[in-house]
Image (tube, rainbow, N blue to C red; front, side):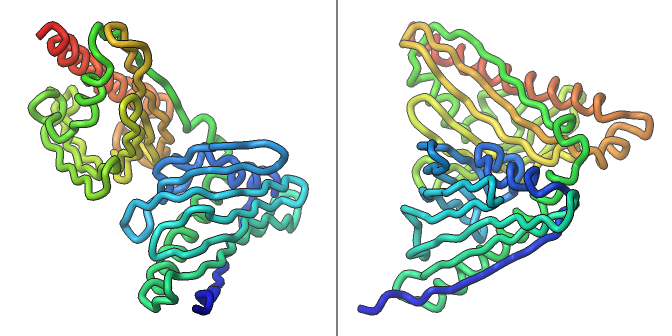
Length: 315
């Protein structure tokens, strides 16, 4: 049987930033979940000698897909080449490269190139892949431009964590966190939660959260579960003050002495600050409010998980 036909795609964008700064964003896959809208979660599996293996979970045409890729990092040539080692249908093969071409000291032309083959040369598969590549490439390049051109990107990004100690069994703590469909009956700040899990370990959920003042915030998230000790997530629809929000629940220790940790990484949306908090409010005010709210909700969740696990252990 003949090999499926190769298809090619290229997207470009002009970025008002030094080429090396743009390259650094494309090269650091660990920052992709809060930089690129399609990326839900990214893990670096191996790294060394200018090469790495990564695993990505990302949205493609509204579906969550995961794959493993090999990448070649070339900071001198301002290029990152990638090829999927394990693809998901309808993709048979996928590869490509990010190329940063400096036009001046403060201007860079970025090209994102793809080469792909569809399983069995299926025309419907080719259309599906081309649509996903087009949608994701445009979103990634736009956010790459935003991140590279933002003079205060670091000031808009905050990361923090909270932990509680639990005298219970690790599996019970994990069960509480994984069974989010029951959070409305278990957590005081969750008014509604709709959850689907069509693929085991990949949860898509919409949640209404009640803030301290009574306001209700609706968020949508994708969660990737790694039993028995970790759940990572990305909010795909965020409150107005946030441009991006990712997080995780991580469990460590042994039964009877478990540490449960909630981590958050947030990128603030500065344009929303005066609209949401008032004309005289600042990004610093937004940082304080967002961190306080997220810490309160995640700590409440951890405390209820502790009560659940400790009661189970006693019973």
